[in-house]
Image (cartoon, rainbow, N blue to C red; front, side, top):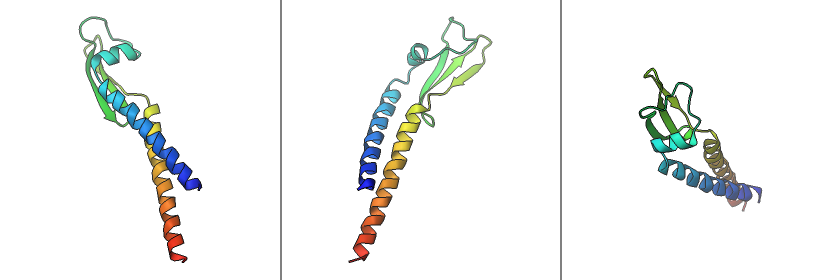
Length: 111
C-alpha cells in the first residue's frame, strides 16, 4: 500500500513540476529577466542589458545573460527549486514503481 501512495505522490509532484517548467519555458524572454530577476552589479540602464534568455534543463528554468558596463557578459542561472520538485518527484515515482513491480513479481512467483 505504501509504494502505491508514494507512486501517486510522485506522479502528482512530477505533473506539478512539469507544469511549472512549461510556464518557465514560455516566459524565457529578455523582458522576463529584467522584470523578475535581481539585476547583477555592473549592469547599466543604458542599451539592452539582457543579451539572451533561454530555458535550461539543469537547473530547470530560465537562464539570463547580462551585459555589464565594461562589455563582459555574466550568466545568471535559474533557481534550483523547480529542479528539485521535478527531478525529485520523478525519482520518487520511479522508485515507487520499481517497488510495486518487485512486489508484483514476488507475489506472482509465490502462487
